[in-house]
Length: 345
Image 1: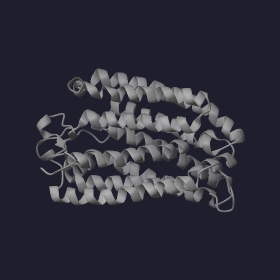
Image 2 (image 1 turned 90 degrees about the vertical axis):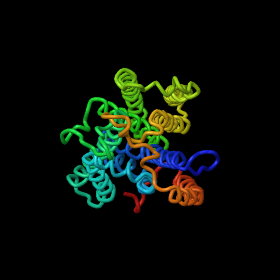
Image 3 (image 1 turned 90 degrees about the horizontal axis):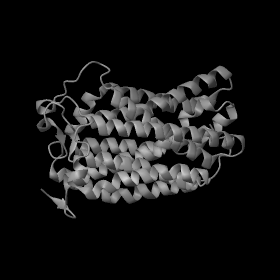
């Protein structure tokens, strides 16, 4: 098996895919989180400011999802196909609400009628909450495993089997961390009464996240078999849960000191460390089988050919700096407080 810097190609591609979806979770996290607060703002002006805070960024952040899905399909086609079979319903709902969310952002301020704006406000709010929830639900199901048989054939249960207790807990935790991320981001983009309102809401979001995080962590340790086995085998990686805990603890500390940029950084680090924990716990498995571990989808039995992976890794080495430059330029250009004008949503 071919390697680069001593790491085999499937593992490298596993890291690439993980990085892309982590970038999506962190950057789109504050987009979805900002939208999840939408109905908590009473005035039309406040809602417009909140939408325009993410206005120049939300569609650019979707790039991470597109590239991540493409990388998953190209690098691990077996996993891509099996995952869509197992999680067909949540993925279809995810796409439907993505379309509705985009339409709400574009159409909300196109007309002045109160009923028109309120209708799109509700659609926008519901879409953001459900998208965040579904992302967590999918992650929760992956952690639990699927009923995979020979040839990675999925033989799952009824239509809404994906809504099991653990997946719901992970979904609520995802909503809570996105809402925390979104409130912190909006504090960086707003001022006046809306800023004061967000300061109050952020405290509620952090309480929501801490409670959801504690319950989900306790459930994971209690009911997911072998969840600590990897850490016993490689004790050095105990640093990951420690770093995740410190990142979580730092967010309220920094918020209390009104250091919102640093709080946003540590909120992002919280998501990054939690996703690293998931990646470490699963590796080299992509989709665990609850029937027989031999039927699990791994980075080795699901990967494309070595030649294909080698070519794609070369493309990554070329494209990654360009993508980084694009996002640095984008966020520097639209830095600062929101000011509404004739071009605003």
